[in-house]
Amino acid sequence: MPLSLRQTACLCAVLGLCALLALPGLGTDGKLTLAVFALATCAWIATPVDDTYIALGAGLALTVTGVISSETLFATLGHETVWLLICAFVLAAAVARTGLAGRAAVFLVGGAGTVRQLVHLTTAGLVVTAFAVPATSGRAALALPVFLALAAALADRVRLVVMLALLFPTVILLSAVATLIGAGAHLITVGVLREQTGEQLGFVTWLLLGLPLAVVSSHLAAELVLLMTTRRADRTGPVRITAAHLQEHSATAVQGPLTAPESRCLLLLATVVLLWCSEPLHGVSPAVVALIGAIVATSPALGTVRLKDGLSAVPWPMLLFMATTMAMGVALSDSGAAAWLVGWIPGAASTPPWVFLTGVVVISTAAHLVLQSRSARSSVLVPLVVAAAIGAGVNPVAAALASTAAAGFCHTLPASAKPVALFAGLSGTPTYTPRDLLRLSAVLAPLTAALVLFFALAVWPLLGVPVHLETQP
Image (tube, rainbow, N blue to C red; front, side, top):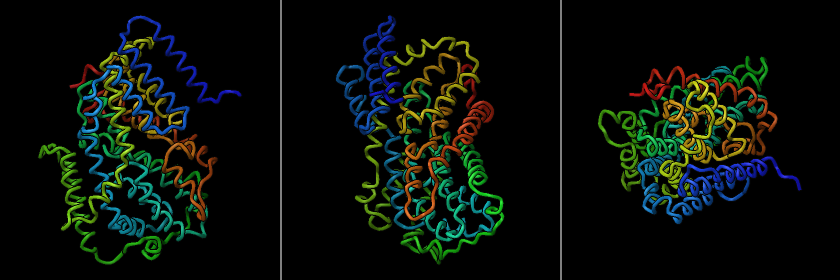
């Protein structure tokens, strides 16, 4: 039976690894680390085994062989970035319970009079959800009722419904880069940078660098989706979305005065986000702020969700995956495996920064075709990108951010990302086909890659992240 493309790629990777391990210059720990790393990557690519199970097995193998200590393995689960995500999910559960999303939808799309206004107001609302709901799959689930209400209101304009079905996951995926809690891959990137370079990227720094990219890429993608899925006649007709349309698909009230739980939850969420953004002024860790918010959100007197229910909304497998892959990154760095592997790249030290970053962005953009998990892509790519950047004289922060942002593109196939699969699998509602995704990706992939590269070379240096390593303050 002929091998599939993925199986062939894995076989080549294993054979290449065997050849590399036979060469001198790498210690026993480094060889063990590379072996475990390569086998885990091949398992992520070619097997249906759960990503978290593979990561746990890899972390256990590195611990049993003595490459990393058990303290290193277990300490990653207690890192403040993991706690930040846990508490953010509890806060998101409190927000979802109150029905504030429906009211926000009425506030935004209710003012749309044209199709283009509807598209960009929806895009703006989806970008904002990155501050309230961690993980793209959670945001997709929160936004689905809003889409169904819009689809019902526009039932006689099928092409507009298909356009909106494609718009929602597209913007959700591209806007995740806006915040540190937007995707688990961001926390993996922060952990790798901390372990390999000592750089600490906090919530505010990520916000400063990621939010402009998220806003620009989301609205450009929205315009592209609009132009590629509708005709001029579809775009010129007026639209009218009322609160009644949205109320049909909401279990809570979307109009009228705010209820007491809604008011408390809105005030709490605004306070938490404000404290996150003002961290340089008060010095309180974002994880501590999130923990305070989670405690208030689940308190008997002021909360809107029980602690048990809030914790049940936390995706524990994803957190275990993140923690274990952080430990794998530590092993790659401490064993010298990453630096040794990158040393075999010819001409790395003399590569111009723009050429190096172009390669990073292109590879990271295409990686979703092989590794469907966004966190797995960052776990594989970021440690190598950071080590290679240091060797090439490129700022590792700029390289890691560019890789992580570019890896956020995963629109080519319905199985490429959970939000894409969710909106593609709707029954009873017109939605997009795999062919629509391929057509969009053919234009959106190079567009987003070019935009990430532009930010890395021209915008982020103005915000304090230079391209060259020697100019970093």
